[in-house]
Length: 239
Image 1 (cartoon, rainbow, N blue to C red):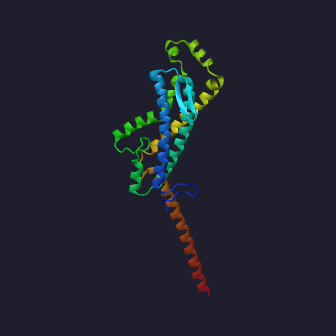
Image 2 (image 1 turned 90 degrees about the vertical axis):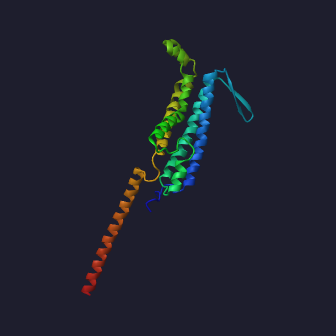
Image 3 (image 1 turned 135 degrees about the horizontal axis):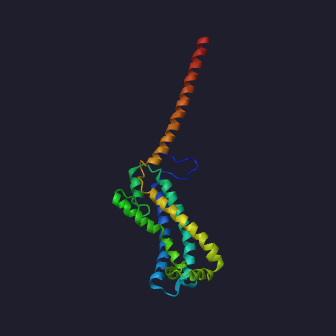
């Protein structure tokens, strides 16, 4: 009874369901990494335009247009990643056998793979940080680094004045704030997978509280039953 999820939860002790959520999260996260990889090609090779295929032909983008597009797409993709990995972590809390814990803890994805030794944990934390916060690479395209390096503030102001107002002043800052918040959430969720799935202190504490409530309910019921028995005994004696 203590391993059953709350009544308003769709989670349960199903390792396959947890792994399936992790598969969806990994696939979407890989897509977001691919978008960042194309942005890195812009930075390294500095092509004037890049062509991206679609069903009926192709689109050509310059570096700034691509960065706008990739920022918006990454926001949507990573929000789905956060949803799937959150669902996986909630489901992992209800696993109750060693096989299920091993299946989830060793799923081949750095963001969820459990590391037991301290050195592995440190390395995993660093790599997960770079993998999760990869959208920060898009900042490169929106900042005039050459003008900043020499302190040419008029050139910096001119750079932002040349941007479309809707993108430069409103949409981009709003989307980037949401994107960073999503990345922070994914990082926090990935940290949750670095705790033992079985015998996790926080989960066990909540389970213990449920058991204590159940024990109190049984105790109250036992007291009421004892009172009822005493009343019946007194009634028989009187009769």
